[in-house]
Each structure stands twice: as C-alpha cells, then as structure tokens.
Length: 150
Length: 448
Image 1 (cartoon, chains in turn cyan, blue):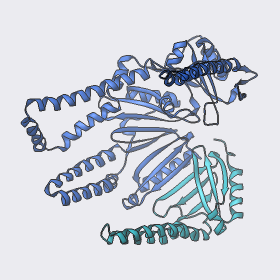
Image 2: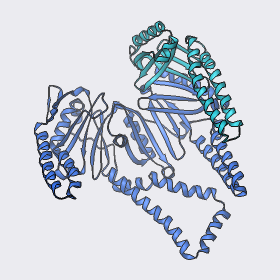
Image 3: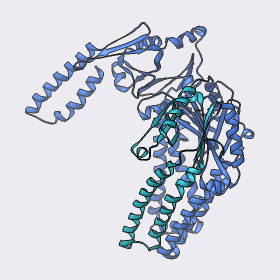
Image 4: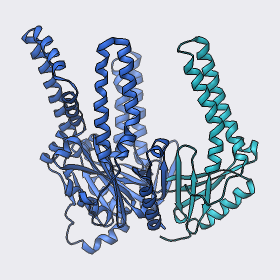
C-alpha cells in the first residue's frame, strides 16, 4: 500500500515458486487420488487442483511486486501481501533485537532473511535479500534500535 | 516439609490397600521420604543481603541461586489449603526473564513472609514511606453480595440465557406447539419431566457459578502500594498478587450479554513478564470481577494513570459495509447447509434455512459492536457480541503498528488497524479504507 521503498532480490520469486510448486504438487497428487477413487463428482478435485496451481504460479509474482521495505527517519516500514495486504510500522526505539537467518531453502537460492523483534514478539520478517545486503541491513537496524528515547 | 508430607501422602495411598511385603515397602518409603523431607528442610536456606536474594538447598543435587533485588518483578503470597493446615504461607518470587517462578519459599510463617516481601520490594517501599502514616484505602473491594451478583451474571449463566433467548427467536410458534402437543400426548408426567429437567439444569448451573465465584474471589480487594497493585482474594486459597503498574500493557473491559443489561462489567489487565501456571496468570490479571461500568472505567483510568473518557459519543463506528463483510462466510455456510439438508431430507430440511435470519442478526450485532477511538495517549477498540470487549492500550506500550486488508475487506473497501503490545493486540476491525489509513498515520505520528 506504500509505493516507495526498497524491493527484495528478484531471486526470491524463484524461491517462492519452488515452495508453492511443491505444495501445489502435493495438492494435485491428493486430487488425483480422490479422482481415482471417485468419491465426489470429478469437477471438485479438478477445480481444487486448478486453483492450487494457479495460486502457486500467481502468488509469488504478486507478492514480489507488492513487497517494499523502507528505513525511514525513525521507523522501519514494511508493506507486503499478495491477497492479504499488511503494512507494518516498527519504531526504531521499540526494536529489541535483529537477526539474520539463512535456512536450507534460502541457501539453495543464495538468499538471507532479516527478522526484527520487539517486546511484542516478531514484528517483521524481510525475506530474500543477498547475504551482504542482509548483513548490512541487520547492522543498520541494530545500530538505530533503541537509540531514540521515548 | 509440607510439600514433602503431601508427596508422601500420594505415595502411601495405593500401598495401604496391600498387605504382606507391601507393608515393609510402605514402612521403608515412609522413613526414606520423611528423612528426605527433613533433610531438604534442614538444607534449605534463604538470605537477603547486599541487594541480593540468595536461595540455596538441595540434598542430592545442591543448588544456589542469587537474584538481584532490582531484577525482582513480583512477589506473590499464596496460601493453599495445605498451607492453612500448618498455618504457613508460600512466597513466589518472579524475576525478569525465565519462564518459571525464580524462587519458591514454600513455607513461611505469615509474619516472616510479610517481612521478606517488604524487604524484597524495598524499592517500592521508598515510594511508600511518603504516605506511610495513612494506610491507603483499597481502590476496589467486593463483598459477598457483589460476588454473588458476579456469579449470577457470569459466563455459564450467560450461555443458558442466550440459548433460551435464541430458542425463542428461532423456533416458530407452530414448531414449539408441535413439541408441546407431543409432550402432552405422553400425559402430565412428560410435561413435569421436561420442565423439571430444565429448571434443575438452570438452578444447578446458577448455584455452581455463584459458589465458584464466591470461593475464588472471597474478600477481593485491590490496593495501590507505591508503584504496585496488590490484589488479595480467595477463601480456601488466600492469594496475594503484586502487579507492578509499569508492567501493565493494556486493560480490557468485558461485558457479557446479561451484565450489559444491568450496566455491569469486569476488568482485566494484560501484564508483561509474568510467568506461572496458565490459570493463575489469568486470575492474576483479573483486576475487578464485577462493578458498575463507570466504576470499572474509573479503576482502569487509575491503573493507566489518566482519566479515561469513553462516553458513547467518543466512539467512532465503522461503515455498514462491515456488516456485509461479516455476512459472507456464515451466510454461505448456512445456505450450503440448508441446501444439503433439503436435498437429503426433503421438505423437512428447509427448516435449516432458519439459520439465515440468525446469521443476519449475528452479523448485524457484530457490526454494531465494532468501534474505535483515540483519546490523548490511549487507543481503545470495542468488539464482540456475546462478550463485549473494550480494550484500552496506552500508546506508549505499542510496539508495532499494522494496517491490514483481507481480500473480502478489499472487496468492500475496508481495512483493519492492529496495535501490538507485549502479550496482546488491540484490533480495530473493518474501518473504511481511507479512515484506516488516517488512523494509521495518526497513530504513527503519536508513536514516533
């Protein structure tokens, strides 16, 4: 819902396509089983499978196009969501700690995520950054975290 | 000791039923456990010295734990039935961090416990000394009659009343008439049984609810001691909970259907950094089981350190489109259920469509309950039909702010604003999209 700000690395789309594709594959397989056993009219499993595939293809694209994050003067702003839109505002002085995370799937695509925690738990997760960029962002955030007094 | 004796009691019970060799085992067990208890008792020491609380003890595994007094969050005095038997109390000490109670002094003489508590909360005492000559009057206290009222209008009773009201709403006269005729056909005994069963059910649930409430909240008082609230309550288990005021993250006013009719409400607080068994946490957060709405709001203001003006005019309602948004899922479900029932059962299944007006009513009431407001340093949101919840959040406690819109909300041009505080979230649902953005920006300015 905010237009300005930094984008994620485009490779994150491939990561999402891979994850979504794997999930869609499971759904399609289940639909295939249902179709084979003929419990319900054939339309139902076919429709479900089609929706799953369509979502797996479309969502990563929508998501990537919507994802923005911006370090503003006194806060971190995140804007994301393919279907469910979410804008998050995290004032710097509320940040408790910042961590960068690189899971096995991230590794496959050479990406790193940055997580921001406040006293109310995990406040934001910026996925899909290049390692150097992620470390820089983490440094920057932990530098400004807690520096401003209320 | 007390704890050891209790543990012993549990072990002995099954053995008592046996004879022969079990007797010897029993005797051994008694000796070993009592010896263990005595040893544990002899080993256990605690000391407050140089700004630290030191607890040490243990028989097989020795432990020694040092807690800086400045880290202590709360000290609760608990007196369970077994403590009452021996005329002692238990002190539970909570510090910052950690998921469990940091130190448990399981049995202390009441006078000693009070002395230890005061020593541990020395920082709070500094504030207290100013007005020490006059004992602060309680912020709130409840007598037996008020507690009975709380039980009488509590959760279970509200459910019964709701079911009766709902039946009256849904069941058409001919439908009820049919049942009545059928019952009458079985003769007078049938009628008596049906009415009798209903009456007994209502009576039992009333008595149970009142008894439970009176036992748990007997002698309820809330007092302010310096920068802490002290909540004392309980008949069988006397509990004394200490809540630091600055740890309070949000307050919530709750009004169920029955209470709303009488202008009554209960007040709970969300406290951060408090651990302990789940059910105790919830009870500790109860600040006022029942009071007139205005009194509850006044106490909320005292606790948050400001006056809270929540007159009906200060609330901002949400657009009527929110009602449509709430109609989609339950409406579709009711239609599907009605359709399926009609297909399967024939004309009798049409009765299921009677769910539709109920669904409509629910979304109408749900929409009317929604409201939000920002007053000075606080934001307040309201929602809920069966239990109306008003959550008041000091903006200083808000950690992150979210503006969200689900696909259905976007279809109707709606959006939500969520204020995250530690352990809780205030959710202002279904605002007009532009208004939601306005609120978001307004709150952003207040936070930064």
